[in-house]
Image 1: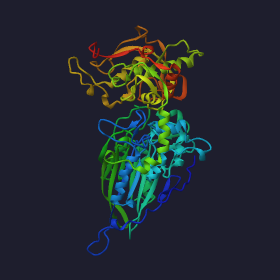
Image 2: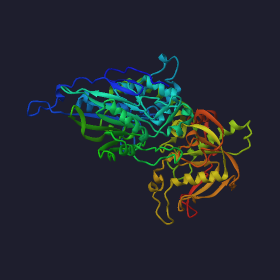
Image 3: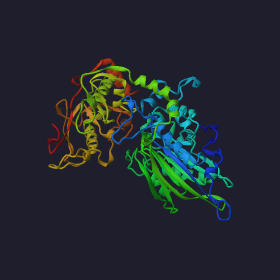
Image 4: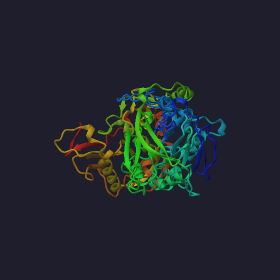
Length: 606
């Protein structure tokens, strides 16, 4: 598709076909004027700041919609753009509003019930468009005067139409140089923008902002993008576009990359590109001055990388997700032969828990916030006892079995009139959210939503017994080896090789032990179905989420397995509908307690 030419609010850029020329910032106030040199002439040195957020994931306010209360964690963190806005205002007041750029590195419109509501319940894609609601993240970011944002992989969870609707509501460009239109083989979004900073009595400083998204979208959101967009590698595409940004006149190049610094890829060899390649890009692509890093939900105040071609230092910074932190890049440039050159760049992070929310941002999204609170507080049923997920990384718990039960029931019903009706149905489930809890008594929509926080949909795949064993051996890699007789330190037992909780699957419907004293690949013992040893040739239907079904996590066999059914509705909604239909959640109806951790054959927990 061809790129659209748009006019943005005063001070931002008009973008056409990926080549951008930005409007000029306001005049520098007297308080920000440069000191005079001994000769009475102004020094040829200037400074400015680039601020960056990433992985905000629908957090406009310091609010937890799963608990219906202000966000709270053990580290006393705060979240949300309203908090970030106060930090941004402080920096603008400190260095001058005309000397500050504000950018984001993606994953903006997914992650909370606030963002879900305006994608699915009262969607911004509604027709006619002029009557559609305004996305609260667009409202907040426009008011904060963002200059640009790179797209993240989660932007595509709701489909391209939602991304485009959000794009039209933003007063700043959404950048993605490596998101390629499958028909035209051209960038589907603007690759970059150039912002001009005005310097009194001197040429403007032109700051190029290049945006790159994550190539894993091709796997994780295959159903939404296949045949429509392709996603190239991050260093590979930067090597094409950084010279173009420089040729367009940029004195300074900042890359906003939805890609971690140097973590291993989660997809194995399914793609020819690296998932977290910001350091590799900085080291191999000449012409980059700084990188705003995203995707990995880590706090990295500053990382210095030497470019192998030029010997110059590239400064990387990743602010912690959800609006916990704000990255700050402070630049000093010098005018040499009529061109600005970077002489210094340092990065740091600012903590949003040190400030109050910006009341203007809070008021701006208050109506949307109230609508979502009413939505998540709907009563959907009752529960016979409190169900916590806290022990799920160590023991089979009823709340995770509930996910498996809902998925298995749904697939069984869907296949009832097909040739697969007589095959046994198993289900994959994982502990997504270690704070999830379904209370005893009244169950509200937010309780079920907190159990399943991702926008996954449900699929059914054909798998053999041998393949399921391989699958479980892979999931057992989640644990570090624990020798017989060694003390049990739970904090050191799980998340081996940084594997996240969402890549620790149980298979509901099978029983098995995971022997953590054994080496990787030989940990699954006593594997049974219906009380009998699992036969390698036995055939099953495995209910899986689409992330796993498309190859997310690089689990063996499942991505290439035959799919016999799929649904378009989110698994979260399927759980909510199941609870509504049953009226009551009772573990006696579904808890199988199918797996346990052992060491040398002896259970770790009674």
